Structures are given as structure tokens and as C-alpha cells.
Image (tube, rainbow, N blue to C red; front, side, top):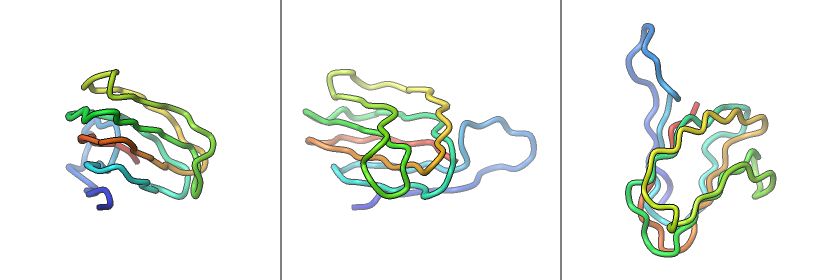
Length: 104
């Protein structure tokens, strides 16, 4: 199942870390954006077992890895604020639980 993505939010001067969020609950590859952007946060709310998250700055392949997470790292809110020059690609593996990626 592809990530469930929501965009937008309130306008005005609201401070936010991204304009979209994608909920991922299975082991899969998600190309969230194929152009430059930013990953604001990754929120892991279910660690699963032997789960992994790999974040790539690329528009079409699993190259240029910029961040990784293992289920042993536990639940958490990871405030990354990583600018991505080529695209935002998220690859989840193992018996994945659940995470929300906040991006723009």
C-alpha cells in the first residue's frame, strides 16, 4: 500500500516543518517528491520488528542515502530539517510498523 499523503494546512504565518505528511505502514518504497524539497520530521509511532527506514536524496533510485533508522532506535520524533536537492525517496523494510514523514 502506497503512503497516504495529505497536503496543505492553515495559511497565514503558521510555523510548520513541511507542507505535506505521508503515513507509511508497510515495507515499501515511496517516492514522495521527484524534485528538490525538504524533510522536516520523521515520526515513528510503531517500531514493528526488524524494521528499517532509509531516506534518500534522489528522484528515482536508492542512492545518496542521507538518513537511516532501525527498530532498535525506538519510537520518536526525529526533527531532521534536511534539504533535499534531487528528490525525497523513503524506503521501509522488515516487518514495518508505522511512521509519518513531514515534508515539502
